[in-house]
Image (cartoon, rainbow, N blue to C red):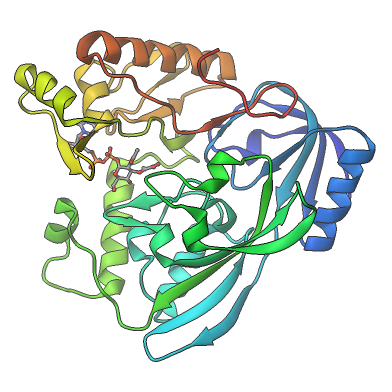
Amino acid sequence: MQIQTQVQLKPFNTLSLDAIASHYVRIQSIDDLEAALKFAQDEKLNVLILSGGSNMLLPQHIHALIIHMDIQGIEYLSENEETQTIRVGAGQVWHDFVLWTTAHKMYGLQNLALIPGLVGASPVQNIGAYGVEVGEFIESVQVYDRENRIHHSISATDCHFSYRHSIFKDHPERYVITHVTFKLLKQAELKLNYGDLKNAMGGQLTAENLQQQVIHIRQTKLPDPKEYPNVGSFFKNPVISQHAFDQIAVHFPNLPHYPQPHNEVKLAAGWLIDQAGWKGKTLGMVGMFHKQALVLVNYECATLEDVRATYKAVQQDVFEKFNIELHPEPVLFDANGLIGSHQD
Ligand code: EPU
């Protein structure tokens, strides 16, 4: 384990923001993690856990120890007739892991192919796409609890998974995820309720084809971060009451909407942004992607301030047109490596 100073984090965040970290370390084991946390404590530095950098907004200078998670490995734990349980290091690349499960005839994660990022970040925002959320296939999450200074395992039930949310979002500075334990199916149960996907399958109903079609749909709609630096969906799809929805629907009868439990309705943020005139529109170096308005792109060498100017303008225009507040999905960090507020 080697602590470095004044490290450029541009290659480690998918929005390609120019961000210099005062201290940086890549860790490959639990022992490394403990040593790094001790260093931070001795030096009175805050700690920022960096995973795939695909869901974070970084300022230009960060005075903190960046701990870059690089714990690898896939371990077989147990199996029964229906399921196979495996434990995966937090540093495994998510998409490569999904491809590996399919190649080894373990099913469930195929709808989540091509999502950027690492395995360790997948439970945090309960990544989801095309009718599947990762929490459905997680058995437990192994963590280092910084508050109590112990390693332990949190069951999926105790992770409180919901739409783009888990306890890890409620306690972002408490847990460091080291491994994720998945329970995958030996027989595929294809989830094809997402319209485009069912059509794309062309009658070939296999998990392998499902994965292929998900990859294809994502490649046609979503920008590759290497070409167009981005953090995936920039805003969460807003969930509003049925009553509020009924009022808006009078004026916008085509508004895409998805009924939710507890008399609530989820709206498509991409549609709202598109209708507010932001699809393919830029402000300076930052804009909303021309094929999917929900994705914010850094077209040149934007700083966090440029990004904030654009997303605040989008929020304002959507609010003025629809009276709906959009909430950013990525986590914003301040100059001390702590989580900041999007409102400031
Ligand atoms: N739409 C537009 N214009 C746009 C974009 C979308 O009119 O520019 C409309 C679409 O026509 C559709 C609706 O909005 O009627 C929803 O769009 P889409 O099906 O593309 O899905 P989404 O709600 O924009 C969500 C996830 C994606 C996930 C897809 C597929 C969120 C915030 N986003 O996007 O997740 O891949 O569904 O399941 O829930 C991510 O989180 O980074 C992400 C990409």
